[in-house]
Length: 143
Image (cartoon, rainbow, N blue to C red):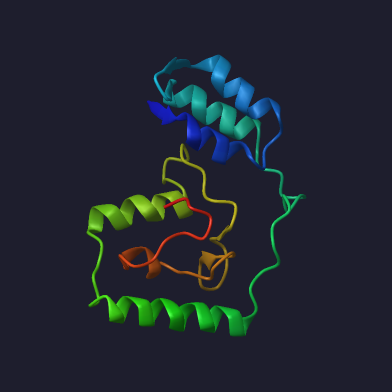
């Protein structure tokens, strides 16, 4: 499998410092990507779990009123643009960035609250709806 080097930076921000080096040592750089066997990558992910004890300087969770304002603003922006939607393939790719992949090779975004009553992003409050809206983007520039 090939992983963009920029993605490795994103994956490693809340993991031990040795995580990134271990990935780089286990694979081969090809242009701006790391070529690595999927099983080795998965083993490294398991061996270096995200550090849940640190917020990494993360801003506080949005309040209920901020979540409501985010929703209304996004809906208005989408309506003004004529209600454009992303394709199912585009949306699926975005949701994999947020939720992680089913095989565990792509870890979930550390901001994703997958075990919440309504799974959502901690940063902006989006659920599975926001990725469908062409007018919307991730506040952390992940998509």
